[in-house]
Length: 203
Image (cartoon, rainbow, N blue to C red; front, side):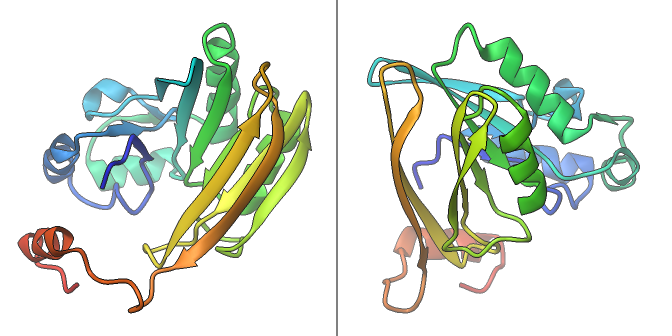
């Protein structure tokens, strides 16, 4: 489907470690979580850097899961840092390298808004969890500029479309976004239908 990266979510982690590792290794895109540690246990990383039209973009993942839940689900001795602390630390570390910072968040809308207000250096937060309409796009004043928040809903019912324009210093100047409800008006993709069959899902 042409993904660059995906944030690990608590639902994604709802299986045993060997099966999860096998599924993650099938992905040909980056799996991200800055607050689930240590990353070496499973094939994921805290962030991804991409060069786009002369700018370096940092994508950082945030996972909504507690340490005890991670231990119970994965059967591994993993540490889970508070997501906001991990994001703040990672954004600060990437400031010398990244012109634009995008958070891929599995956190609640309230937590996303709080991070936007309090953590300097964030430009965009893309969410997928509770507390926001799939069509909701918000602009929040952060410590050093505007932060765009968008939620695309859950369970793949919507596709989020967001266009953000930045000035030469990487600050948000214009944005527009919407959630597209994937109804039967859109034809099924044959390759995706076959993939779903392989995993014994009903398209």
